[in-house]
Image 1 (cartoon, each protein chain N blue to C red):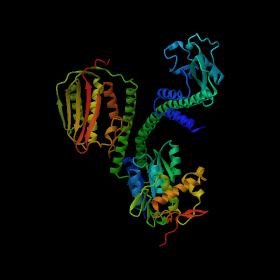
Image 2 (cartoon, one colour; image 1 turned 90 degrees about the vertical axis):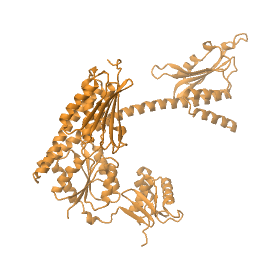
Image 3 (cartoon, each protein chain N blue to C red; image 1 turned 120 degrees about the vertical axis):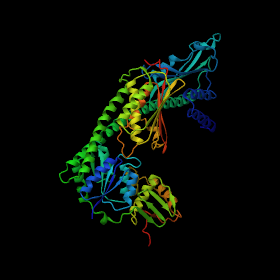
Image 4 (tube, rainbow over the protein chains, first blue to last red; image 1 turned 90 degrees about the horizontal axis):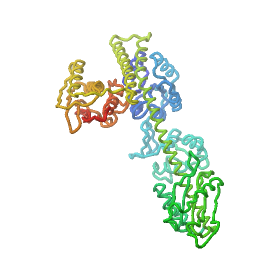
Length: 232
Length: 396
């Protein structure tokens, strides 16, 4: 089956350039012209590889990469301008697999695409990755970074959302305070337990029917916290 | 500390943290302090950053020497000593004679004003004819000097912060310019590189139509790149005022007719209606003004293809108003405020502009002390207006 590649750029002529060359190699191509559209297109069909420009209106390439990484390991190649070493490092840190420096030649583009696809698992085999996550009456839309409690949307701060993602990505696993603090706030906050307590209490206020007997984020005294597996 | 003293200190702090300007705060602060600590004159000196000498920044006569003006003691000498000795100093009159005018019998109390650990000023209190400063007076005055130090330090920080902010903004503008210009120059280069290497690929063959499409893009992008370089240089010269404008008597109706003839020969199917009222000649650079008109025409061709264009000239008061109206798709309201900014482009499928055209127009019109602006209704069209003053005697 032909590999499907999503190309994201706000310059129509880049889209045309990438598309024309990729099609000669037998790839299927879908396009998006900004980061927000890219996440939408990505989450609606199986994609084997993303070619992502950085400077774009609405959501930029970094934001889109980060959003996609919250629910998918599909390889992403970012397209950056020459000399922007910081951009390349940032892109790789956010989970991009490779980068391509503009201006690039058509043959280099195709070689990078082949190399990254060779290393990656086919989209069909990855499995277990979905745009939506549900846990009881709690629902997360990773692509839009939206959270719902039943039918009503829940407004979370950026930190609260990142904390919730930690639980959603590790259902059934007890996570220690240190682990949560390090991954959400950073290593320098490792022992700042109070900040975690406050945040968990606030998350429960927003997400739980009864914050005193939580169903989504449960305390395991002396060990940490977990999102218990749902009984189905 | 008893509750009453605490309340007083709190009152002083409230004044110090007030929102008034520094002068008013000092004024209110010393008036409050005087309820618990009596003095006739007060003066605050701060060290000048450059010369190192003391500069008087606040002085007030509130007691016995109210009418003595400059004759009374203001403690400049003790202030200098406080600065060098970095400590509190008291000075009493050498001989006291009851017959002498009290204003000549000054009891001085000099207190250091500090920034961090260094002394950079002095606060001097003066009592004419006493009484001598008791311990509790000195403590109250010391508290006052400490609180004023905080105020002055805060003022210095704020000033530094403002300067830093301005500097940062300048650097930011410069960096933005450099990063935008390199992005703008790289974009056409990227297309030229990408499409030419596509055509050069040996592992595939492109049909004739695609080859033509790619070559056209390469050609257009090469043009865009050279236009961009030209525009960047020109707008830099306009900005630095090194592009000389040749002002001479100019009839705008004649310029508009010339430009229109040229444009009609370039775009054969263009539908232009001229409505040129009678207008006096103005002082202007004919080449530059024609450049502005041409730019507005080519913009109309680019962004309102197929639309008729109505060009008008009329006199309104002491100004001439030129208008270019099209019935194109209009400019989105969110873009309208930015179209005259450097490198701003309304993105369309076939945008090939440099983002400098209207910016240059604005620079040229402003060099003529005129104004240029646009009004637009999406779906109905856009009108560009240029207003040029008739009386331009001020321009040389």
